[in-house]
Length: 245
Ligand SMILES: NC(=O)c1ccc[n+]([C@@H]2O[C@H](COP(=O)([O-])OP(=O)(O)OC[C@H]3O[C@@H](n4cnc5c(N)ncnc54)[C@H](O)[C@@H]3O)[C@@H](O)[C@H]2O)c1
Image (cartoon, rainbow, N blue to C red):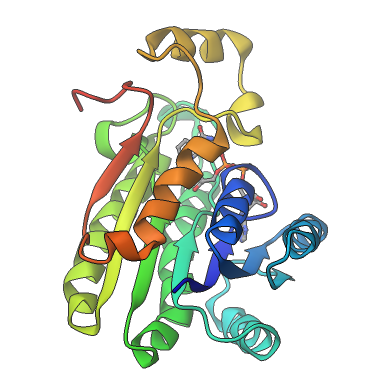
């Protein structure tokens, strides 16, 4: 039993790798991203591998618009039993330089987006008698990250949201878990200063950045039937960087 998974942020990076992981595990996919061209390309690639997939433009900060997106997805593929909140946004900048628009963007995309998409799709999981929610938080939300202060607050919020959601959803056989990536080789990280990336890599006990597929493997676990009794957990996938966090 796999089912249908909705994956946000699936036009690129970790979300794109999650789409491949879940397709290989037998899921059909509803891929959402604000990058319409990218998400449609991702859906076409998944479909070529033999699973059903639709790629739709969605801004996860716009809750009313997500209702229409859900209806379109359900009509095309069916009702998802798995929600993966992966879309996110970060720019490294000292807190003292952030302005209010920056704070709001960090909270709106990383925290409110996760809440919006979960609320838009969770009724479908309840109606099917079970399912799983997997939220991509960050080790920044567990141990902090210099230059990502408001982002860390948002990701800490995602972790707390996931734990309370797990409490409320357990009666419906719905699990809710978090995956916390460490530094991962995607556009979000690779646009940063080369020296910062080198310093991060040296600090990682396994001496390399995560590959997006490393993160996707943990998502595949939480979304699979073997994890059906695992809920409210926070799993770091960081090559040992945060093993003492
Ligand atoms: N790369 C890392 O080092 C790292 C570390 C920890 C956590 N994360 C988290 O992993 C997740 C994926 O990040 P990534 O590294 O793949 O970055 P990425 O920039 O490659 O992917 C993020 C995706 O989210 C989409 N997105 C942004 N705003 C959106 C919106 N309003 N509505 C819909 N989609 C939107 C983007 O278009 C993009 O496709 C994020 O939640 C990020 O915070 C990344």
